[in-house]
Length: 284
Ligand code: FAD
Ligand code: FES
Ligand code: MG
Image (cartoon, rainbow, N blue to C red; front, side, top):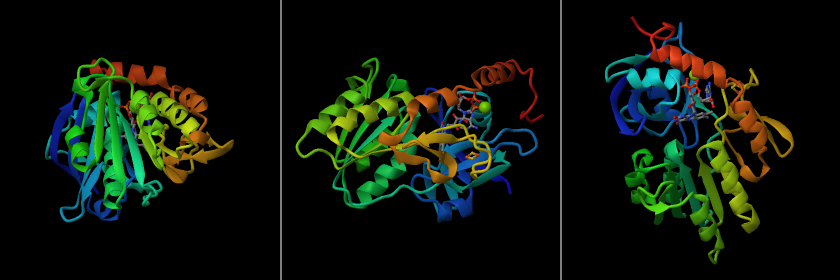
C-alpha cells in the first residue's frame, strides 16, 4: 500500500514537515511511537521517523525530518501528491504518560519533533509542563509556537544566541532542577551527546530522566540487532524495548560509537546522490 503526501513544507534550515496518508497508523499510534518507511520498496533503504502527530479522522500522520543524508534528502525532494511506497508502524513502545506533577521537557534540534506529542500528552494528563528548546541557531529552531501553546513555561536557547538565550539546554535544565520543588520527571530528546549531558545534569538532583534513543534501525522488529544498546548493563533493542529508556542507565558512549559505524559509506552515498552518480532510489 502506498502513502500519498497530502501536504509538505520546509519549516527550518534543512527541516521538512509532511502530512502523509496512513489511516491505520493514524488510528493506532500513541505518543513516543515511530514508523519505518521506504520511499521505493525495490531500491530504497528503510529509515525510522517518529510520528510527530496524527489525525485519525483524516487518516493522516505528520512526519518531521532533517535532511542529513541520502534518504532524508530523497524524502525532502518529494512533492505534495507524490507517494511513499511503504510505511510500517506504529512501532516501538508508547511513552508512559502519567500525572507526575512538574515535568521538564527538553528538546534539541530535530528532537523537538518527537518531543511535541509527548509534551502534549503530559499537558493533557494535568502535568505542569516546563519546556526547554535548544538549537544551533534561529534557522534551526522548530515548533516553538506549538510548544508555546501547551507549555506552562517555555525557555528557548540557541548555541550562537541568535534566538532566545545564548546557552546550551543543559544550563537552564540545571537551573530548573535547582528549584524547590525539583521537577518530578524529565523527558529529553535530541542529538545523542546532548541527551548524555542532560542526563548528567539531572542525575545529581535525582530527577528521573527519560530519553528517546535514535540508534540505527533496519527491520524494526527486534530481529537484526542493528539497534542494540546497553541499558543498566543489559542488551536492549531500541525498536521493541524502546525507543524510550531511563537515561541514567544508558551507555551513551557505546551508542555513539555504534552510530558512527557506517559514517564513511553514508557520506559516500550522499555525495553520489548529490552528484547524480547513483541511481538507486531515484525515480526516472
Ligand atoms: P545517512 O547519511 O544514511 O545517515 C546519517 C546518520 O543518520 C547516520 O550517521 C546515523 O547516525 C543515522 N542513520 C542512518 N541510517 C539510519 C537508520 N537506518 N536508522 C536510524 N538512524 C540512521 N530523524 C528525523 O529527522 N526525524 C525524526 O522524527 C526521527 N525519528 C527517529 C526515530 C527513531 C526511533 C530513530 C531510531 C531515528 C529517528 N530519526 C529521526 C533519525 C533518522 O532515522 C536518520 O536521520 C535517517 O535514517 C538518516 O538517513 P539518511 O540516509 O538521510 O542519512
Ligand atoms: Fe533490528 Fe531493532 S532494528 S533489532
Ligand atoms: Mg542512509
